[in-house]
Image (cartoon, rainbow, N blue to C red):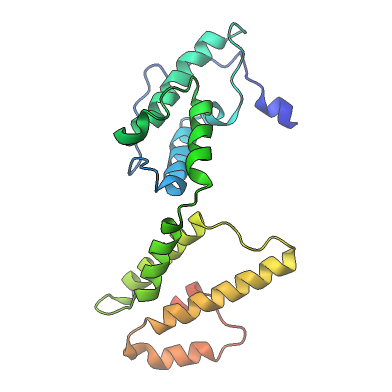
Length: 208
């Protein structure tokens, strides 16, 4: 199917959202949490089979099925607005369609990649130690911080498959060293056994 066909509105698709439940994600958009917020919203909207309202171009007013589409789109629009902090809603509520609203949020917040969103978890990664945590909790916390960094940071290597693979290997090694360095002394013997491996295992394998 071509992009043109994929973007076409289907006039035969009936309105189905009039009595649907509200959509709520774990937190509201505040301008600094856009990457994770947008992912959660996509999951929620897509789970209702209405991802097309934020992805496809809207039909022309007056075209077949437009009124039903508009009713559904107003519901999707309300889902998005309901998950935005009150302080910034007024900057975006003037948009006429869900897609226009969604695109405006992306232009405003996505490209900022607010450096704090990367700096904050990176700082926590540097500082984290196992300490009083059991091994599972320590691994879960540092792994969660890495997920946040990966979610906010653009891929720095795009030249070729070889370059991407080299970067991933280098990044995995750095994360393995950090994970091992944060372990308590009781794991020293296992730590040194892991570092003897060639090539180094992934963090997941080392944890296992």
